[in-house]
Image 1 (cartoon, one colour):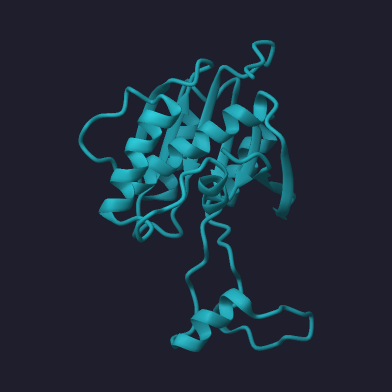
Image 2 (cartoon, rainbow, N blue to C red):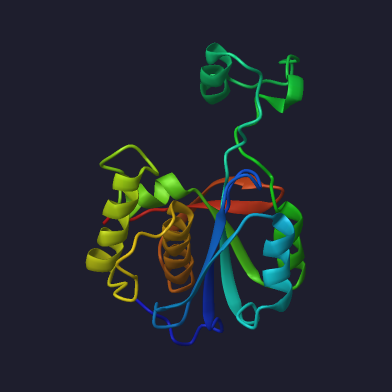
Length: 208
């Protein structure tokens, strides 16, 4: 499936957390879909520094996962309402933007990359896991889930360079995101689920 005529030499996947309280990770793949960098960040300015200074950014394609917005009013019914409440123009009760499903964290960084003519897309990590046949068999992001995901990436998708010790969940997710942008550039079928400020959030159509 690889299209060696593509101009991109590096494929960067960013698994974004919804705040600096949780780790985000960046994975860089080369044209042979081998991991050449795997790093973890907490602050948006550190992610910005990476894209400002990393030699891999030039001639790259980049995918950012969409983090969910956890800001909401307290209360169990509001947590469930955030997921299922139909939104209309006349829905006025929106204290602290609790009806927002997704976070726009790092949007300025993403727009800067777009302005610099970097090929940038967004994706949804849960949709990718389902598409790649990497659905959680255990509670998502628990130790058992991470161990199962890491072994699956090594055996099913050939990432033999992964260590034996368990990686953070965000690092494993960044590998999936980088794998997706590699396939996207090389002809993987996708469709647009929605857009965030003009940047498409893509769905991988095939299922493994």
